[in-house]
Structures are given as structure tokens and as C-alpha cells.
Image (cartoon, rainbow, N blue to C red; front, side, top):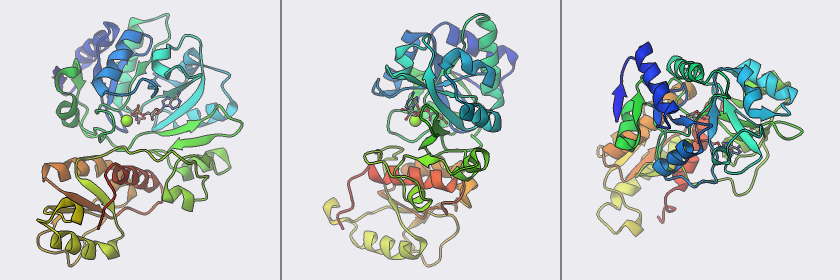
Length: 353
Ligand code: TXA
Ligand code: MG
């Protein structure tokens, strides 16, 4: 594995050559780091699935250089999709569209749709442009999931990528910490009305502003339900999980919960005790027991999103048995943060206490 710091033109070109040769390049986007392969190369895309340990029926997002490239990968593109692309690309929005015949099954898991996004990070865009220059007459795209092992916390720094994937990736471009910090919002544009399938960097409020209506939402999340979104059964996946058991608690309940966990310390895990209790909250909390480790407060929703995954990893480095998280308000990107926390909490056995 080669790690490239401040990328200059030669380094970007080297990364593009790795892609063209069927290799894997981890690269920064504004949301999280992606593990990229040439989207037109089924064998390279296959390596992404094996490195991630991801089931092959979970399709990959194809990253493209600009909105004009949509027509290379999708067909029957509705006006709504063009509107959203105009408003939010480059940016943290993925559009699900009917796939063009040229899209390999390996990318879409055999589905009839493809997820497309133009990332907003100078290094990602330079990489896409350099790769496009190597393929003047072909559809150019980089298929990339988040650069973490399946089910784990997404990487928001090059160090996170190295820690997760080590030598399984041919090259890592280091573009510093990601600005947004949670994944892109996914909007299904293949139905009569757009439906949000994953909350992310573009908030529901901003989508509604552009669409002129509240979009349908088909994820299971308390914030979404509060916002009047439709609930889709069976969407709650165990995902985004650190090793520590995550519990989402309101600020008023943290002190009691921490005390009760510590009181059970040293007893069998089934009793619900925890030796190392770590707390993450938007702002500093009063009256925490001395034995509790309080992480640096995560701040309001945008800041919380930016630091979320790094804090989850930090809790693991501290050896947390339990990470108590006070979520940010559901406004803006806060809804995506709450969604990820919920899934992280669902990834561990329910607390028996
Ligand atoms: O912010 C992001 O979206 C990051 C960066 C690297 O762009 N990528 C990312 O990819 O989060 P990934 O693979 O970790 O998550 C993409 C999600 C998966 O749940 C996948 O199943 C879904 O998008 N997806 C992709 N294409 C799809 C399709 N055609 N139909 C349904 N779901 C799709
Ligand atoms: Mg992912």
C-alpha cells in the first residue's frame, strides 16, 4: 500500500493509472473516504467486494466527474433528478436512477438501478478528471463504497482507512479529514415521487426547499418519523458499529445510566455492568461519575456529524465497554447522525439490565 499525502498532479495521475490497471484506490470525499475501482471493470469491482467483505447484492455508488456524465450511466432520467443534481452536485447526494445497459452487474448487484454521485472534494474531482482523461471515449466512473470493512464505522481520515484496510488497498490518497463526516443522502428517483432511502449530508429540509415538497422517506429512524416520514419496516440494519456497545440516551438520563453501569462492573456481562464507560454528547455534561470518560463534546449537528465516526473509533481505542451517546437535535444533518447512532446501537445485543 502506498499512501500519498498532499497530492500533486503526478500523484493523482498515478492514482488514475492504478484505477485504469484494475487496482483499488482509497480517496477522500467530502462525506467519508471511498474505496474506489474502475466502475466499468467487473473484476476490479469484484475486488472491492472481497476487500470490504461485503455481500455482492449490496450495490456500489458510481462516482462521476460532473452532472453531464449521468447520461453515460443512466437512462430515463426524470426532471426531478436533474433538479436535484443541479442544486446539490458536486455534493453529498446520491441519485438512484435506471441504469444504462453499459453498467456492469457487478456494480448494481444485478439491479435495474444505479446510484450516481458527483463528490465535492478537490482530490476526488482531480482523480475523476485524470481517470476520464485516460478513457476519452468511454463512460468513466469510480465505483466506491465507504473504505471500511462491511458493517463497521466509515473512515473520515486516511489513517482510518489504513487502520481498517491496511495492504488490501493499492493506494490511499490523503486529503485530510472529511468535511461532512457522514455518508451521502440517497434519493430514489426511479419512482413517481422521489424517496429518501438514506439520510445523509444533504438534509431533508434542503431537499424539501429544492423539491417544493417534503420528500418521502423510507428509512427507519425516530427523527424521520418525527418529521412525518413514512416508516419502512425491515430497514433497520445493524451497521456503523464500533466494538463498544453504543447506547443512545438523553442528556438527563446519562448520569443515572453511567452510575448503574459502573455499579454492575465486574459482574457477569449479562448483568449489564461495564468497567469502562465513555460518554459523547453535544456539550459538556455536569455531575458525571469520576470513573466515566467524557469525550470532547461533539457540538451542534454539523460539527457532530464531522466528528462522529472519529469519536466512535476513539471510544474503541479507550477500551470502552459501553459508549453512552447523547444525540444532537434532529435538525439538518442531525437527522443523519441520529440514524447512524441508532444503527450502531442496534448492532449490539440489547442491554439486559
Ligand atoms: O457518501 C457516500 O455515499 C460514500 C462516499 C464514498 O461516496 N459512499 C458510501 O457507499 O457510503 P456505501 O457503499 O458504503 O453505501 C452506499 C449505499 C449502500 O447501502 C448500497 O446498498 C446503496 O447505497 N446503493 C447503491 N446503489 C444502489 C442501488 N442501485 N439501489 C439501491 N441501493 C443502492
Ligand atoms: Mg458504507
